[in-house]
Length: 160
Image (cartoon, rainbow, N blue to C red; front, side):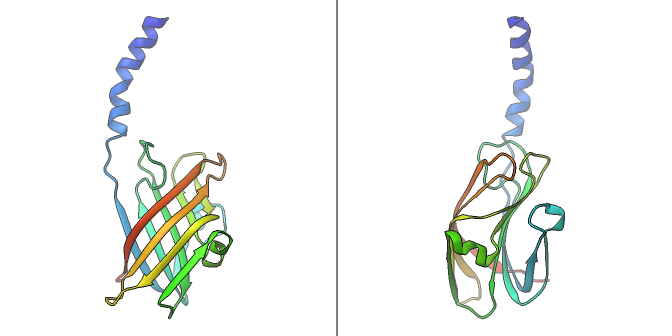
């Protein structure tokens, strides 16, 4: 029994190593005159459509869960009013900017989770980009796993 278990572990270990070796791909864009919409649960209803706000979208192939070997598209998105030059949202105020974390995966936490803790703040730069600091926490819809994002990045305007 132990010998069989060892053989299984040895034979499957290359698959574990391969799964951990994907390169992180990230993107940071702003969509002007847009609006973030979703039904609060299913990722299939997540959409950015025409509207009257600035929508910030962080997209990644595996955001928030270091050590997870899967390649799962994820997004951390929020919106602010058009015409502002800076913003700051913390904890309970995050609901005001509609901050959400979306996992497009075949996993227990698939779907949309609201960002409920931490802070997101930003300042518009002279070139029209935004310097944004994110220190945000959300919890998995089913597992209650903690997903934390700590980033200071430049978001650029999405060109259609």
